[in-house]
Image (spheres, rainbow, N blue to C red):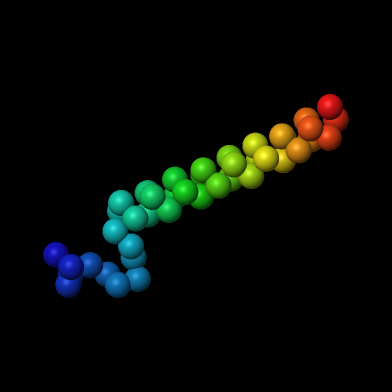
Length: 42
């Protein structure tokens, strides 16, 4: 239950969501860089 969870560790779903957000942000950043390069060359 809640009181037995370690306070310094987020629940599994939260960790997965954070990892997914981080990956999505990374993909978005790389995609924007590629888009800027293509637009700059075009």
